[in-house]
Image 1 (spheres, rainbow, N blue to C red):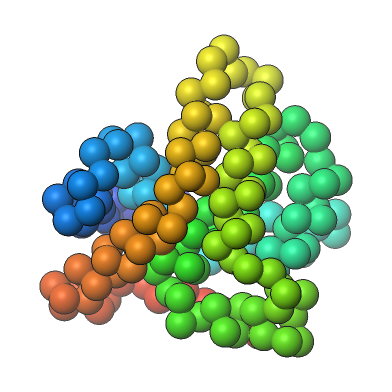
Image 2: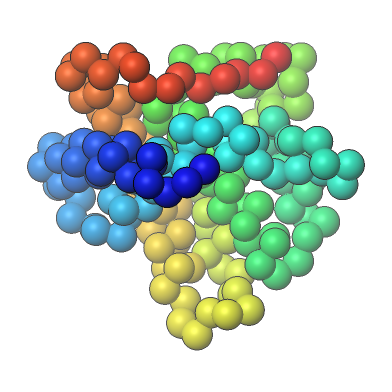
Length: 179
């Protein structure tokens, strides 16, 4: 997707995220707010929500399968899968918590997982993995803060959703939940 069509949407999410996190919740961490804005902008596309793929190229739609895939990878690739698990669980827990009953249905591998705890754990793991290009651990420090503040961030994402719904912005894309 070209960055130009996404830019107005990114600015929209940035405004709501800044208002919600900074003004309502008192979170003044610009890096975290920017990360949340990017997460919302990226997760508009279902191919990004389900971007982790198995060896045959099929998208992984369950956290349990993503975690198995993470253990098969090393270095940057392992970090990216754990970061994505953190993003995935934060998004669903915060923005669309009503979808969790389907995502964690008894017929799915995720039925025994607690998304909040797994999100915190995955961000923490990702924060500890040094990347090949990384001179400092600044990205790792950010992911560590995401782990520590997971519950507040999930609550804030729910408030972001309430803001866009309150504003009557019902034309925003809705997520696709796979059976």
